[in-house]
Image (cartoon, rainbow, N blue to C red):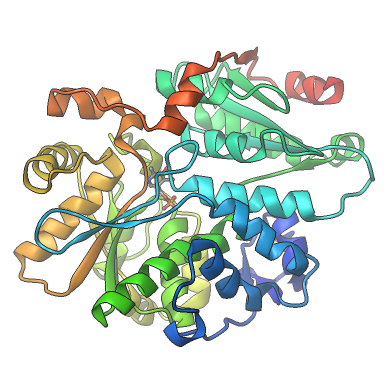
Length: 432
Ligand SMILES: *Cc1c(COP(=O)(O)O)cnc(C)c1O
């Protein structure tokens, strides 16, 4: 499948090329030129998550350099289950995407991207490819876990010193080996500026092959369709009805994947975005202008996004705003609503949810209160034990980490200090 840039000023590329590049050379985001059509009958009745992923993605990878490796990449990225579980006693569901090594949905996309980059031949031969990633917490950990121990690949994580939670900092520094964590004397924006600057430095890249694992990569977006497809199929076979979704949303990567799975033909119904107090998407979908702005800090910090990067893809897919507003709706939940939803969801549904998942649980409760029928799933994007400082005081009980996260937290952690200075980062990369 060929892919094109949303900005229309870059040549069409192959999928493998687009996955290796991340961003298109004109600064746009890549999208496939055509979408396959696959309905429930296209999938074997007993297809598990890796089999659904392989069948779903095969038409997009057909004829590509990565096609032969696709089944193996899916087997590894989707070895972690994504179960559709009961959510309370009234027939609602929780789509649990937090069973991976860093206990958040980003593990799937990061692992798929790592598989693609490992499978691609690299030039110059024999030189490792160094992935530079700036993170405010979750992304860096998922990328570190996915690339840890992968031959020919190294990861340099830049995070703002003192501005990630203690548990996040421990995770980021716990990998060792081919994954190095740098605690930068600066903000997340400083980290992102440093990462962008080295990635744009052609002289440095000639000496040290560099790559990115940014969330706008097709290598992270496309595989995220798989858990929605699998959940929709499991639900369709049990209930002969479409599954409606509420998706916690920040940069819109996870929710866009749900929309794409439905567009391909999977039996998904309504898709509702749940934002935190960063309400740029709810305002647009309510009929207002799209007004990107600086982000606000909230309890659901992985969704603190004021300019959702994947909105550019939505606009390319649905140039008419009225047509786009028919595809999705969106609601905002402020910090008071998040706290209340964590407490209420535990009391009424017997489930402990993370602050991001709580936004979606609150939106589902609003929909039900307005008399909305049908079968709904709240998408659980992270395990609540990643956010003990928020969840434990509200519920007045400990929330133990799942085994994979506990193992990571039990390892020693070490991060290296880095000055907020481009020359220091360039010197470090040359010396590695
Ligand atoms: C990244 C993240 C989100 C937001 O996902 P997007 O794809 O950016 O919309 C939501 N919840 C958690 C826990 C996350 O880590």
